Length: 446
Ligand code: S3P
Image (cartoon, rainbow, N blue to C red; front, top):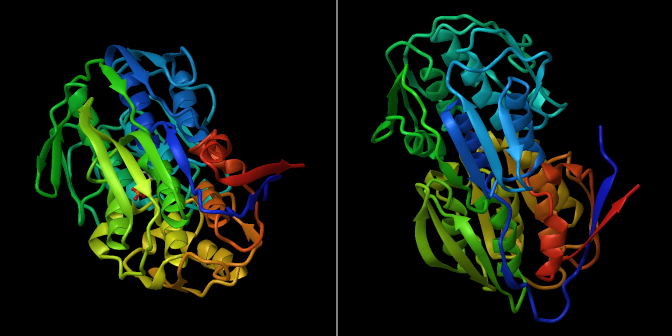
């Protein structure tokens, strides 16, 4: 199924590039977790900088339907009246997680410890995504979960299970899996621990500590004891580095750019995109580095630079996992070959991001060859004749749509991007923000 929202790009002529200083919307991962932990805490939690996108609203609505009073003071400020870990009430209907894998996987962990039955459902894309990665460890903790035969949603979770702590050696480097198991561990007897094969985003561990819950990190092992309490706190959500990624790429490739992105989260488990762009020769500076509410934050200045193709170090893959669609655009306008390996996870995101990006780039004349676990892109520099205009199907994947908008800065003619409504899942005011710094993009909806 496709929606009727289309983006059309205009090539950036002249050498003024992207200019200005903007604050992008709040971090999606942190916003989800603020609702979850705020709802389960004792006392009133306030959240500022909340991402008012459809994914986080799916999480918010789920907790409202389980009896939590969440006041939206304005788009980005929330007051959450926590009910405590045992205070949720049975929802009257299925919990609709929309397009959001983070909601589905983290909620499965939390719902495994409740006294009531819950059914978690999602949209067409989410209904095809693998859930055994969470249901397998949760079942071994004692959770009672059923899914479709192939492990996909809907997930039906039976209430009243007694959970016991386990140690789980994660086969995939996934923050969603780590978080799901640790959140179930809040309800389990004894210790729950996970080891991860490579570092992944650590927002759950940081935020649990911010709510006064003890979480131990020992190398690649994280552990906690069940049966504690969360104490309400204040959360200030930084801007999302995953949203910043489009602008880091756009400003790097468009000649004459000098752009500052304010108050961006620069947690080292998320900054792989900066490391990769720097290895490609980008001109990115972190200014005013500080820590707010347990998360590192900085203003990021990016100026245009000549990029070169590189072999992406596999260790950086989980640290830039959501940023590859944008990085493939950077690679197109770099000189030389970019080789990505060890990134098979990209095939099970909101779309198969290896195939969908390769198809879109090829449709615009770019030499992009998908492989089982990555892609090889022959970059030809930031000049005319590298990429033609063309028509792209984003497959309802927000990050594909926004990446091709940045490609449109240098493409020879208009890129028409179909199926873009899902940009609202993570970046509701993307077109306005992009336009305000000089990106040529218009929305056509019929
Ligand atoms: C997320 C973890 C990542 C990421 C997703 C958000 C999170 O998924 O792709 O957008 O908030 O924990 P995986 O855990 O599947 O890598």
